Amino acid sequence: LRSLSKDILAAANKVIKVAHPTNPAINYLDQVLFCQNVPEEDGGYLAQCIFGDAQADISPCGTGTSTRLAQRYFRGLIGLEEIFVQKSVCGGAFHAKGLRETTLGGVPAIVPYVSCSDVHITGFNHLIVEENDKLKNGFVSW
Image (cartoon, rainbow, N blue to C red; front, side):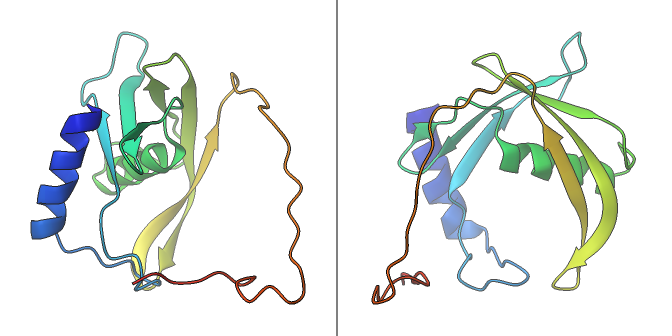
């Protein structure tokens, strides 16, 4: 899947035009979600996200879960407050529901809520920003 995802992304970015409704810097595809379209016996859908430099996500993918929830909602397959379950090939499951409709840059959207009961704390970070850091507000790469 990792190798295949690189080929899929390269081909897709050549033919699919992406335009984020509020951030013009997001104009490309950068992850692939392999997923079931037919639920398993328990009602959940198995999925595997490949992102970055073909890294496999061990979680069910929060972005992908939110995206699939929104797709199902706008296709009339699920209502607000109804639960959608996306499962990881590693065993975890995200439970998601749409809280309400909204818009993002004039595009219809939903506000998703995603939860998972089998997550674990893997570390704590202490981030600081020094006053004279010329990149403290981030940067845009062309």
